[in-house]
Image (cartoon, rainbow, N blue to C red; front, top):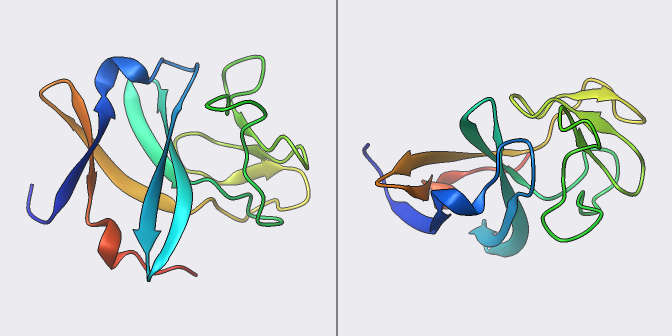
Length: 121
């Protein structure tokens, strides 16, 4: 993979449809909370900020999924997001999206790619 990459964590620290992994990322000079979850065998990463109001999603550190393990949920507003796309499926921000980060797995590690080029919208 081309581009700058950064080690985030070991692959076994992110449980399928379970506990995620929080980390910080600097984007456009601002340090933000971000997270990685595993859904259907694939890791996904997003800025840890609800699309409705900028509050963190997890209800306890690293707990992003609802009780079914099928959706990401905002602990403050109850907005429900599709883990594979970050799209809000229900709640006060339907149709909006979480801000994605590009991650991939390599040698049993999860890597972040090109975070410095991400533009917030």
